[in-house]
Image 1 (cartoon, rainbow, N blue to C red):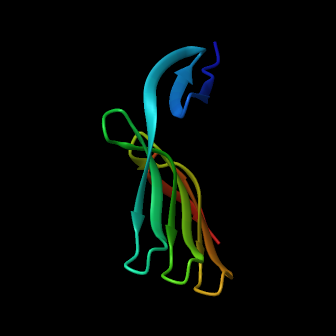
Image 2 (cartoon, one colour):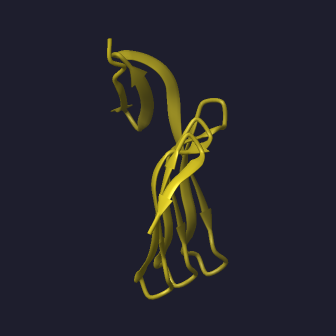
Amino acid sequence: MPIIVSVRQRNERQFCQINGENKMEIITRKEYHENGLLKSEWEENGMGVTHGTAREFYTNGKLKTWSVYFFGKLHGLETQYDEKGKLMSETKYVNGEKAWKK
């Protein structure tokens, strides 16, 4: 039987569902640079483990890194950009292990 994982939002709160059953709350965390612009934003499960998307930004507001975590491990595509927004690299992770990089 396939496992279906989805994220549902209810009244400002997000929940991770596995095969339609609520399993955990997803919380979005944010940090800011001294200039007030967003420094990083990531999602955690209710146990404080990074789970979902994570983004880092330069002090000029441009995206630095975009990545996906699954229960604390990089899992999926991570993209990195320079300070002008140009794509520098893409790395694919599976369960925290680097699968390829271009």
